[in-house]
Image (cartoon, rainbow, N blue to C red; front, top):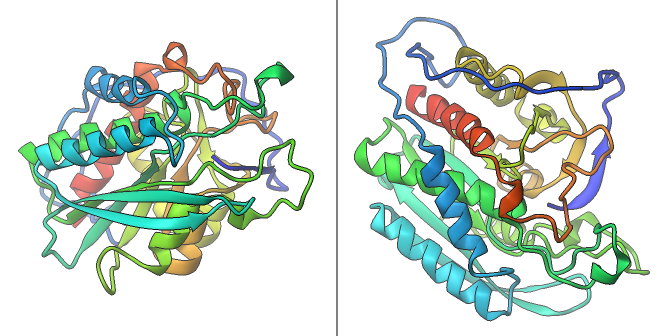
Length: 335
């Protein structure tokens, strides 16, 4: 992620001092489309394996920075597509040449893994798989031109989705599921750039997909974007654009987290507005989509954001588990 745009909601006066872990899964009903509490047949939700997700995060980081136009980027993209295919998804590779903020032509690749592709009722799960070309938020200015490993900022969301794909292979949800990995998300103008900074410099892959979906006329009931979902002690508040475009989906997801005992991680409070992939999915594809992204009162998301410290030392299995299990709770209870 992204442009630094953690604008505080006017009513947000709460500073969070500590975050604790929640409990395990619970079987409870949810009617899905509308967030009512009418009882339905109990659904067995798979158990998210945080150790497995952690390994998928590490596997991406092992390729090094995944910056478009580099060998590590190509190799990681091939791995992700092959992994989704191995997990039984119908894989679509969407190649595009996208123009970066400085005119550089980026050879980008959105990777889509679909389950029940024939189903009309669908849920879209998103993450970005590229990494920041510059550590422009690093405390040491000497590192500002160095690309980051992006363990949290990129790989964590993808790692959660790969574990979800592994579980879906063994037990299909009732609705069709699309796992959509966006490219060229994190190449927006660096902080040291002296020219104009525009929000459309970010999220190039999602902008392209939103205007040119992998299936003509594609639609989904809703979407969930995962971004930086592996940091220790992370707390997720209801992001501003998510509330603006998809308030009911925020409610659905945060209620699912509460049922699981994760209220200290999914905090039922308003957060800031973030320029992220979901903004363009909402605006251009008109699919109600929320962003699960950490809140930090200082405005930098996490201490490792866009720094060389965004590595495997700062990936927490507990955070991966709470996010992954919450998403599973939502998609398996949807009808």
